[in-house]
Length: 340
Ligand code: TXA
Ligand code: MG
Image (cartoon, rainbow, N blue to C red; front, side, top):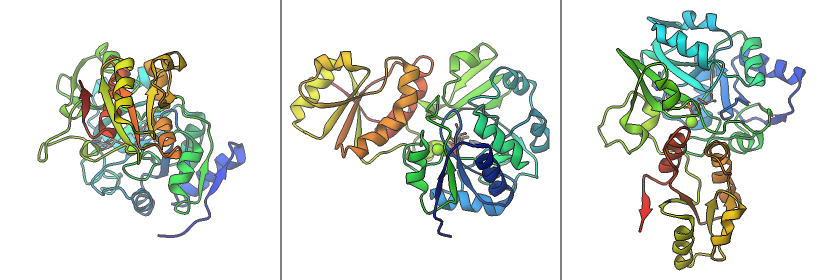
């Protein structure tokens, strides 16, 4: 793999042009989106796709989402597109929704991980949209972390994972949403939710029947088939051990204090909740489910910066964006929940 002196670029017209140019030339760059930072390269260039997989250390069978800047690109890239696709695009694009449809041959098999389908998304982050539009290509962009690590929600976090491996990361600020896009596929009479995100099952149910895939809430068994290969892999794991606790904040703090581990952290909603702490270290990650989703990956990385041995979280409520929070946390915790 080529070595780079990776640049951390500020958000400017010039740097947006520079990143779009790199993509044109078959290079890959770190870009902000409203969900998480992505590792972006031309979806049509096999060489760029190889670079993405190798910088991330990603398994070759895990397909990449293809990001577009205009609705007219859909028909260049995909075929047999259901009417519902356009209804959902009208409502949720540009935004954090990825829809899987049948791909056209123009998309290399490397991009789709060997599948005959492609996941399409039009992001709303202005830096992402501008870079995609100026590059003139559909842009493949997985989350900008090393495979298995928490997704990056700041340019600095992406820089840390990708330093030396790519030419540049452009800074577009802290990602507003903080967890990756909702991923759906189409069924005869509705959609299948493969990965929950800010566009929730309830939001989609306003339009159609929503089937929640088995892999959303539980670990898939060894040979269980899945439409979305990403669900098979270990994910979002910091070095600290993540433990989900089913109970009250007070019960969780009592439980931690009995363990006598001075490097264990309680991750709680806000400093009000710190009243029930039993002297242990803590981090806060927000009052609402939306705020908690926004701060989740940053907090997982923060635990490692603090050399935490463990991070304890309360089991989130699974309604709305809570299902996405649960889906990411349960993976980070290796699918175990502690209940007394
Ligand atoms: O918010 C996001 O979606 C971010 C930003 C950068 O846009 N991207 C992202 O990409 O999260 P990635 O590669 O980290 O996750 C994509 C997920 C994987 O679980 C993958 O298996 C699934 O989407 N996926 C992509 N294309 C698919 C396809 N054709 N069929 C089934 N699953 C697909
Ligand atoms: Mg990812």
